[in-house]
Image (cartoon, rainbow over the protein chains, first blue to last red):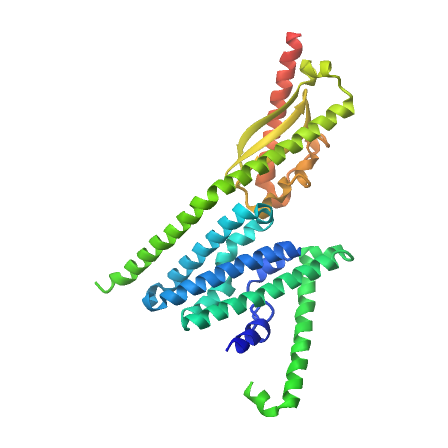
Length: 196
Length: 167
C-alpha cells in the first residue's frame, strides 16, 4: 500500500509536476530554498492536519455541508500555520506571508481532502496526505534549489519569466524520463505494462 | 428536525475549530507582538544610522547640533494606506530630509515590497522629494508614504522658519 502511494504521489501522479496543482505559490515562492522549504512545511502541516480531522469526522459530515466543512477545516489549519510561523519564524514569514495565507485556496489540498480523506479509511487518508506532501515538497524545494543555483549564472532565473521557463524545461525533462521508464517497463513485462 | 442536522454539525464544528484557533492565538500572540516590536525597532535603528552618517558627512560639532537649524529629529506620523493605517517615521536634520521608514503597516505583503529599506523607500533623503514618484505596482501604498513625507517636510520647514524668527 505504502509503496503504491509513494509511487503514485511522488512520481506518476505528483500534484505539482503531473497534476499541476498549487502552481501559484510554487512559482512565486521558489526563488530560494529557504522560502520554498517554509511553504512546503506549512502546506504539509495544513494537508496532514486537515486530512486527519476530516477522515476522523467523515461519518458525521452531512453531504450538503461537505464543502463548507472542508473549507472550515482547511482555513483553521492555515490560520494555525500562519500564527505559528509568525511567532517562531518571523523573518521567513515576512518573505512568504501572502502565500502562507492563500494555502487555504490551494486546489491541491482541497482535492486530496475531497478525493481521499473524506472517502477512505483513516490510515489511508494519513498516508496519502503524507506522501502527497512529500511529493509537493520535493518539487517545491528542488525547483527552489535549481532556481537559486541557476541565478548565480543567469539572474533571470529569480524573475517570474525565469521561473516559467525553468519549470517548463523541468516538466519536459520529467516527461522524457517518465516515457523512458514506461518504455523500459513495457519491454521488461508486456503484461504488467498492460495492467498499468 | 432532520433539516437542522447539517446546521447543527456545522455550528459545532465551527465552535470547536474556533476554540482551537483561540488557544493557538493565546500562545502565539505575545511572541508575535514581540517580533513586530523588534521589527519596528530595526526600522527606527536604520533611520538613526542614516541620521548619524549624515551628521558625520557634514562634520557637525556637538554645539552645532544643539542649534535649531541642525536639530536632528525622528518623528512619526500615521496615514491611511490601502490595507489600513501605516505608521511612517521620518528623519530630519534641520529642514533637510535624511530618510524615511514605514515601521508598521497592513499592506498586502507582495505589494509592500517598495517599503523595504533596499527598495523605493531608500530614495528618500538621497534624491530631492520632487523627483520621487509613486510606484505603479503599489500606487496607493507609495502615494500614501509620499504624501505623508511631503506633509512632514512642510511642517519641518515651517518649524525651522519659526526657529530663525526666534533667533
